[in-house]
Image (cartoon, rainbow over all chains, first blue to last red; front, side, top):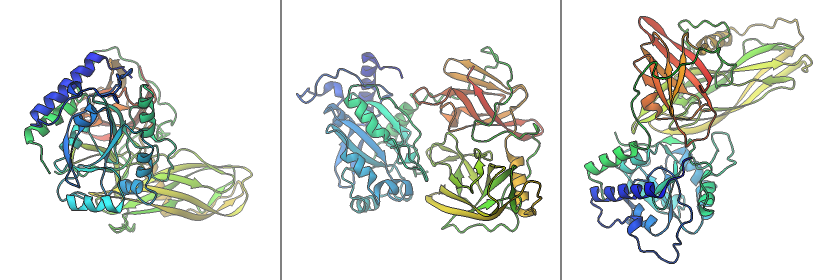
Length: 221
Length: 315
């Protein structure tokens, strides 16, 4: 893996800012503009990876979330592509609630968003279905709706679940499966927790990319 | 919810394409030194070459007359296939697991797919019977909304399982067992599985067991559908992070990269072309083997398509 140099990271931030401008999101700020707080120590190690496209999406409870705001606050952001009616997503949300179990183990500076990029009328899409899913699966983090699929396509999300870890200043530090489980195969390694552990320890993520396993994202046509 | 303006979505999509190196193939045969043809290596990939070296038009391996298609609410029917009523001590046999799908549904070939996962077969064979690696029929490319590329098996498919029977395997009635788990998709996906059982016998060496002609015909057809060895004249050259694969005389190529081979980027954009050359991009962020593995479909003018196993060390 190539270490990302500071000036490349700055270029990435430039892209994020450019995005923000193009998307008319005046409220979004880049990490570079964010005031430093005492919880935000100067990072000794800059996470490496492709630039993470910024986005603002609304959750099932009506709240609006912007990636760059979370990053500016020093948060590492986990994105989970989600479809309440995909049996693979379902298998991670019930009956053992393995996704919730993973969430319960993440470090304190981690924010987790589920994103549903299903198009209108597609399986598992829509506000009402996802509001119900939050209750049904006891999801403890926001479920964001991306009905146009713009954010899913920007990240190349292809499956549910598909996990992406975005680390400050705004790079994709991990992209792939939540773990190495599959049909008839028990998981032995949780790649997301491993990536978060590497990031927390100031290391390069040892396994930055894997093939996710799941249903295809039900994008609108 | 607030919708992003269309221009914004387009911009996001464009920027997202940049790190994925989604260039279309740029055929430049001879741009880099080429290596000579190697003999196909022995069955390390997910399917194995036919042993006779030939590869003519494949006989049909689709749904056969008399095979019942399952209903859409349980779209996979799976069963064991055995060519004879008994396994013979000290001999090898080619067994199979037959999948018949409801119309419009697909299961996944063990390739570099954007979604899904291949059926997982866990055989539990009688004492003295050991299994080799599953041999898969060649897949088809399937592109869904959002440019989701998968390599899939539709309608019907036979997974071939070579077995060896020990010279001292216990004689008598036995049951072949296997657990098969799958994800099957159409516009939606279902996950399910089945316990497969087939009562057989193990008999003394030198015995000629009764044929099971319907299963034997399906197994023969499946064996004939297996990819052949490498196509004549295949060359593979390295050009930076790109691999230039060329088959002289072809006017179309499709490469189906195996899941246990070199990870590739943008399989959708680079692994198929109406040309004699593919310019494959390795995915340097993803760990994997340093061998190019998969199945290559070759189209030639006025000839039937042929499918070939590729399993090569990188040049």
